[in-house]
Length: 249
View 1 (tube, rainbow, N blue to C red):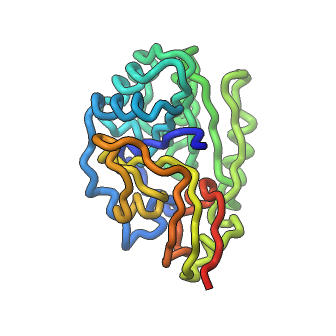
View 2: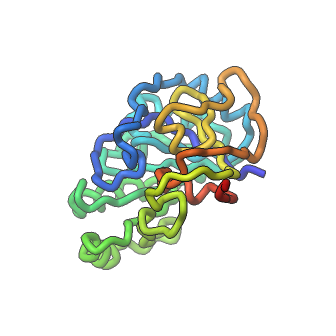
């Protein structure tokens, strides 16, 4: 049974991190080709699917009607927004009144000074409707930034800070760089910026192997069983949402 729907509002981003999981297979990346959908379209999909929602990207704050979408989303189920929090969040913090809205923040020290990041974080913390979770990736180059962030972390029970494992270091046949044929069983609902569902993040980023168009079709088979001939060059995001991945010999 699915636990949530991940909506990629846009795959555009205001940063170009060298380790970006969306740009993992850069020559095959086609995320810039997607046409953005209206708030009304997304609300229709959210109501039809009826599950908790994670809004991700790209950078969701680049979606021009993010505040309207958050405010009008169902209040009886969780909604979380993934963001790098490098853009000024004042309008989001000032306007949103939807209760219990989550902010999942990836802190990338090379893209924003810590003083500015802490200012943006304080702006969001002023709105009691938000709760949040900030994570920073555990890499040697982030060692000093991790220590400084911990030392300056404010006492707020609705906001957490954690150090996340480097996804590229996770032992997996999906990330070893050796192309192989596998049978994959997937457990995620991944919806591209055009409202079309894809079986995995890798195919969503490459815009191939589409499933249902949720703008006009109901949610289909769950979970997805997929025969893949390109395992080994997967997006690191796919590892977490894979139930099983077995070699075909």
